[in-house]
Length: 239
Image 1 (cartoon, rainbow, N blue to C red):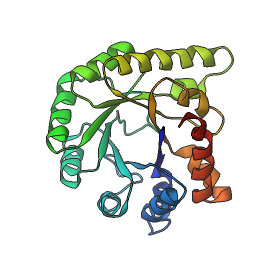
Image 2: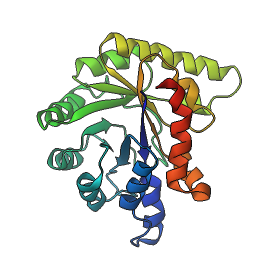
Image 3: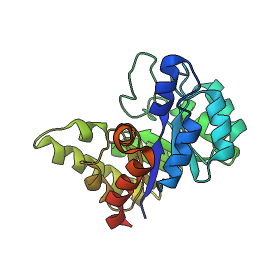
Image 4: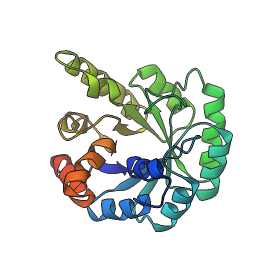
């Protein structure tokens, strides 16, 4: 079965636009669970542009499925993760000026800093995932650094057109095969939607997809519970 992690960051984005109390991402998580989400994904950014510390604390207390915390290597954020202990942490790159995550974490260039974070998180009993580009060298380094899983960055595939789509999909297939060979759990995410997800879901031994923007966008028109159900229906043939 492929697990669906629903990223609810953009619910918090709407709330923070007015610096008010609604819509509450804690409520969004409950709706996503009722729609069949296997996990709730949130990104606690250093600038707190959407998810807040309060959200992390309450979601840990209230979510009944896996809570996946996306986060940078910043010591402050690692401290929070080790204290709250979500079931999974996904280490991602982060730049203040970016609109959304623009690529995978370069675990080769940041080997020492990444290893230190992974060691702390694993000592706290947290499953660790590396959000990386589908480069076999990055996958191999993630394995060397002690990650439990890799989440392949699907942004290039999602943004591709024409013949480039199959080329980018092949990179994901090759990166996924390398991960599986090394015994890593295989995840993928970024830019996936109701039109392009099934090809990624069909990659051998794909275990988890994390999808946010498309599901929240669909929820504006049909409600979050229904939007999650529709994505789960797309994944059902791969169970």
